[in-house]
Length: 105
Image (tube, rainbow, N blue to C red):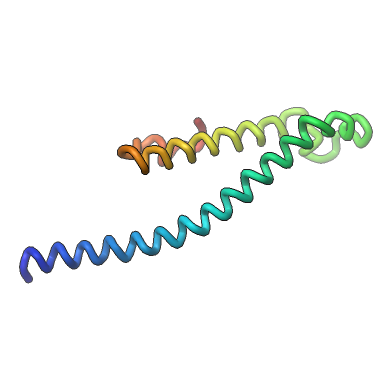
């Protein structure tokens, strides 16, 4: 096999992976948009009605605890920041290994 053929074969493999990744990106973007809206909806509830409901209903579900909702919103924000870092590096520069492996910002 010639060097050119080897390069073409590697390029075809890379191309096939790229096409498959693009399909996964499309699915992920749809999911991410939904996750953002779910996060905003919960944050709105937490900032506007949560305390009133907590006083009326009491604490018997994690959503009514003091730490759980706050931590979930913080984790959501941290993951969004991580996603932004990864996407930015994908557009403008190499991905730092820590961005791909760390789940917290």
